[in-house]
Length: 112
Length: 114
Image (cartoon, rainbow over all chains, first blue to last red):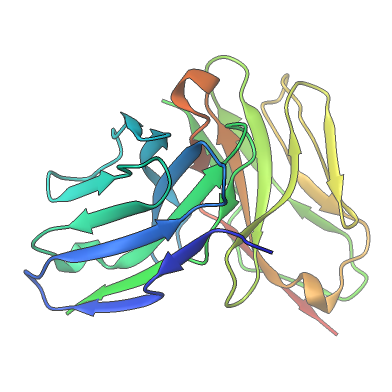
């Protein structure tokens, strides 16, 4: 079945590089969420879209993090000038109803 | 702010043992509560949910009851299997005007030995 997909699955970046992480939600899902999961921790909320509108970006840790969903479907999370503390798994989830979220496999980002 | 606290792991059990993973929460309003499971090498999957007080969520032999008086949502299973080895996350969903973003506990790793 067509679940949430994310690419790339793994990304290694040198400190200072920019990265872009892609999320393809389940077709027709209005809501899209990004989370950051550090090693051994639970996911932490980054940002939320309803269609193309970014309604909540309170979890973005700094202005180096930017997310967009221009056509209300695919979303991209961009991290500029990556730092070692950005190393984590980035999870995308989508939802039709706003209650039950379906998660993608995540992108593991390692900053060296 | 809203938060979720889970018992620390790892939890190691023998097959067919009884499982309890404690979860308590702090929230304003009336959140929905969830248990998610992450099997080795896989993404997060919803295991069960409860949307109001006294609701019981259940799936695959797992159960959890939404207890408002004790602000708890403990996960239980009567007889665990090796295949239940995974990391379990308790989560709450904030009010719908925030789109239902999830707040997770830190996760509890379960290891079931044959």
